[in-house]
Image 1: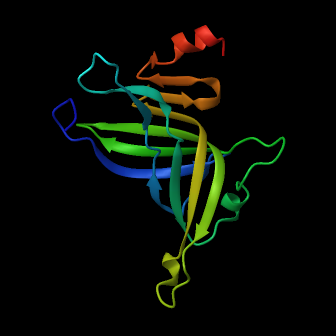
Image 2: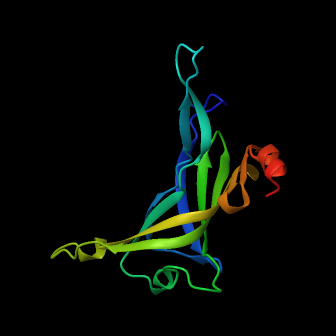
Amino acid sequence: MATNGKRNNLRAWTLFLPGAVRLEGAHEYTPPALTLVKTSIRTGGMDAAIGLDDGMEELTCSFKIYGYEPAVLALFGLSEGTTSPRITARQAINAGGWTGLVEELEGMVSSITPDARPSGATAEASLTVEMTLTYYRSTWGGTEQALIIPAQFVRRIQGVDKLAGIRNIIRV
């Protein structure tokens, strides 16, 4: 249940490749999980251990597209002097009125796995694309929800930069 007392239901979504090219065959998208790496500490004067934030797990996402898409294959891997692809996921949410969730995903396309080729229902054969992210930004109705840039030591959640103090101390 959302904080407004109504469910925020996903109605539709689409993916865009760099250059605002809509990926029309996209039929499944798994956004990155935001997961902390946690370490436990227990001193002699503590009855139980407590968890401490020790950074984040690697950010990954995946999507599936029907058929074969040469534009996606061109994004596979990184080579010297190339920029990471930025894929944009646009999602329409009914939250007592329409709003949008936009996710910007930048990083390395690390895996492109074709489905087995069936003897029937061949039109459903897909490519699964996995990305390892170096940049993730999520906005809800135009308001930033998360901005994570691991190499720059940035983790901003709902406008609060969780790593600013540490970043200033270590001068990153």
